Length: 447
Image 1 (cartoon, rainbow, N blue to C red):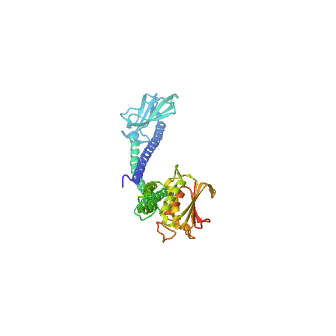
Image 2 (cartoon, rainbow, N blue to C red; image 1 turned 90 degrees about the vertical axis):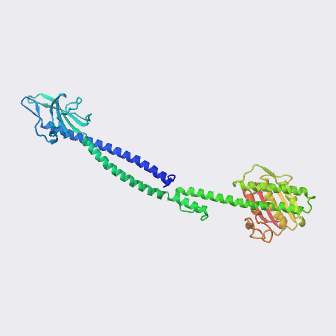
């Protein structure tokens, strides 16, 4: 498994958590078992103290004596691990069991009759002291201290046995849980591997987008990735379109230059103007290609000046048709728009009007117009006296590469450029039949 993979990281984290958990469980269980074993031992030693008290007797001299046979034979075997003592006054040892030969009794605290104390002493034994009062044959009450001790090794052996059993089972459970966790991780991360596989398919061109059935939590990720893929493809498509737009934009200046070749000296200024215009077109289209898709501007361009320049240029391009231009525009009409965008919009529409007209082209500007419940600052109308667009062709010519008449030379992208630019400017484009000249009418509403 790759150490940098998400599966390895999760499995390692789960392994660490399980390890800490099982260590804590082992410590808690061992401590709980130790306390339980010590409580049980305390109860046993308490019973042993009661049993010693129950078999005590007095001799004729009033001294406390013990029988030779006790109920627990371990008191009689040296080193058995169970030891008994009887003291009087907390100092004088009256009796010690045969098993306690050579052992010192633990010094008890001051106890009231009937009280007991249980503890683990420094000699490695558990000790229980029980204070009791008995009357001798003369009726005199005497205080005695019954002490029962047991080696800690017995409890330690029990705890060690538990530890061995517990460790074996915890290790088995840990490995089982790790295996289960690994299986669950593989199953849980399967959708991520599916997305990676689909992304590879998109990169190789076998898929256009992420179309798998993903969990709810991954819908946002898949949607964002699909949006990113769509944006990248849109950028690529726009780069291609902008190259086509560039070629189309240069078409008119090239046509003017072609007409000026024969009389270069007479049209030297026109040639210079068109060369400058071509340079501006190249820079403009390159800027559009590098744009991110948003269209924001705080610049203004004079629409009237642009119309006049385009009219003068088209008069030379279509000099053979003797076109009569009817230009009804204010002396100045500033519009919040890039100058290059206006050249594209007006240039394409007027060029189409000149191409299709019989002899007349009309350009008008109206200010502060309202359309479709919206206020527009400028309405630009370009009309001609040509045949107009056939019924059913209007929406088609707005598509890239489609021309109204396939027999007419052109790239079929002029109207697409116009439509896209007006949409980016949040304007509105309308087309229809001119009631004045009888040909095509284009209405451009600019905000």
